Image (cartoon, rainbow, N blue to C red):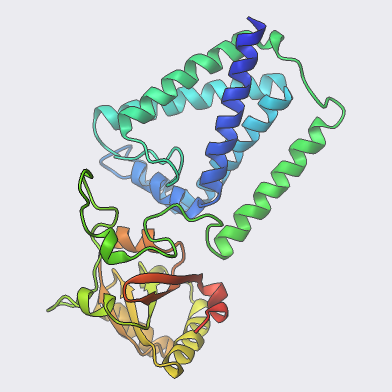
Length: 319
């Protein structure tokens, strides 16, 4: 029994740390997933939508910290009760999502390991059994680093806060998405033999009257200003963006905007901040997937993503 309990301890602890880390690497992406769950046709918790980012950061740090305290055997009652209540909640959530087909990807492992709703539910059932074993047989768990455990936990917590701040102010340290640097967008949009769907969907450069996707993706030097929603964009960002735009034009780059916002919002942007570029439109979800910044910057060379930058790092673009 001791061997089985400690296997469960290590397996669950490592899984919680991994799951927490990949989401902490991209808290904005996890907040988008929470927003999907809070929609009226899913859990109908619209009042929580303004707090999705704060909730996302809290949940992923909490999850990662539970993995650490479990491996250390620290804070017995807090750890075992937190694990049990969390896995019961998420087992219900993934079952609800799978049975009613509400959210197609739970976001359990961020974009690192996409799972179908039923795969997510199956994973949570296995974890529920292992955590129940840990909960009722905690006496077989021997704490380690007794004298320094609380300082290890505190150090990990501070490191998590620092890492979350860094990726929010810049971009995810590891990009697991279909639009990572080095990817050719046109190739990603093509359905490959044996695959159900192409890796890139609902992407394009559109106006009210025409489709400029092929033209822009075949251009050698393009700077794309990406902002999924201009009314929600960071006001202080546009000075940085403007400086990058001017520098790109000096180097003969074609500079375009990509947003889900309409012509009225783009006109206000030019009026308020002097951003004088041609804006094209595409699906908001696709834009959120391209870059975790609003606004952000992307350099394309014949459809291949060469660089991506948060607006904080606009001056770091290499032209």
